[in-house]
Image 1 (tube, rainbow, N blue to C red):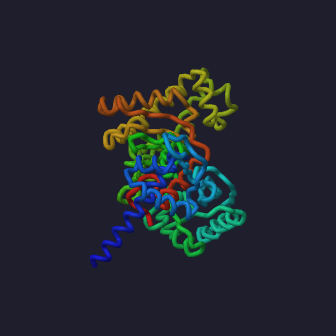
Image 2: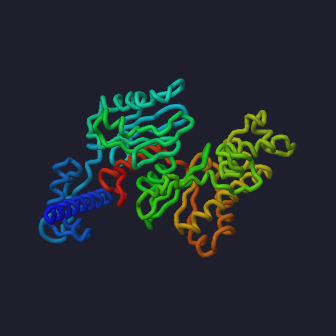
Image 3: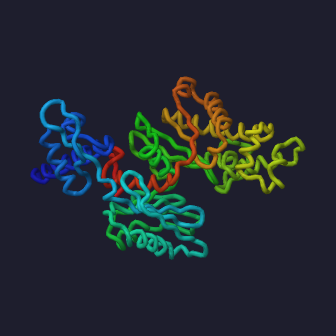
Length: 405
């Protein structure tokens, strides 16, 4: 038993050192062995051994020489990012989008497949069609398959617990795809993956903590704590769209009354803005032929023109989002909170309303130290989040201490 434990400890240390060295090379892009030893605290012998193994695995490569501080020129190392890729699959409206993404988030290939008329039992075959198409021309080594799934997802077991719009209940997609392709398979929901995309491929967070609130047809959030995506005990962390913020509001699809989604999602904004269409002084009448034709772009233009009714609508949206963010700040004290999604086109007026509401609803010192940003949804954010998930699980790039497999 003692020999087994010693062997297990050596293997754990070896894996830890390998991931640590790889992460340093990934973050620095071009770095010498000596600089890796200095940054990690590992001996030069250990670093050289790990580097040799990573080169043999094709994960890193030597790329020229750096400046010398005396003696031989140091050989620089970089990640061989185009030699390895992730197969990322995401549900977008009524289609599945698939992409082959390299380790730096570069989209190497993209395919899509409409879902109209599909039956739930056919979903694995739909996914396989996209995977097969992506693999057919791929020249890179595939690290794994990642899925962004709608609904409630259990990423530990690789199961879609419930996705009402797609008729999925306890669907074991990881098991099905692993048996077909003999590759690692990971899945999560879009809001969580948007947070991973911002953390890894966006501006990140110096503290290792980040909350990303995505506002579109619905409202969801992803939370990264100490460099690790936080799922919650029941994998429902970030379901703020169904937190009640308006006691006298309308009934939500979930059954509650006054959920955040009923007052701050894009459908809620359009519903509230269309009520102002009948006002003779409204800018909306000059921008759309009818109330039904008022879309988010029309709302944006009316807001920029100073329409008082639309301005009041957006201030109310910011008020409710600020309340939700105040709860995040009070509970977790996260310094960087990003609001993104389709709603981001509403710009400074919305952001000012959110910040003002946060200041009113959170402890003043905590609100003051919180940086709330409103940014456009990054191109291919979910695909990048899927890639970040697989890279983290396979290579440890996000400092995660808990593996999903």
